[in-house]
Image (cartoon, rainbow, N blue to C red; front, side):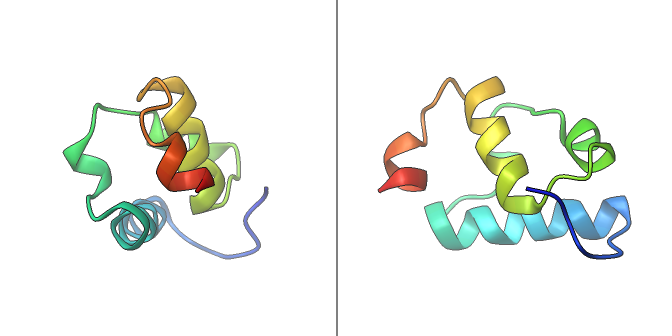
Length: 68
């Protein structure tokens, strides 16, 4: 999913953190490092970036939370 916004990188990262906190009760900095800059530069939405981080960096640990 592509973004339709004008986020700079810092705004994108904050939105990813906020979205994950609402969904899972923890933020992006509470988990293993993911390639947030790459996700941003690819034009991903925060939700899509979280999905990719779950697959790429977190070994699907949040599948139950993300996919209920």
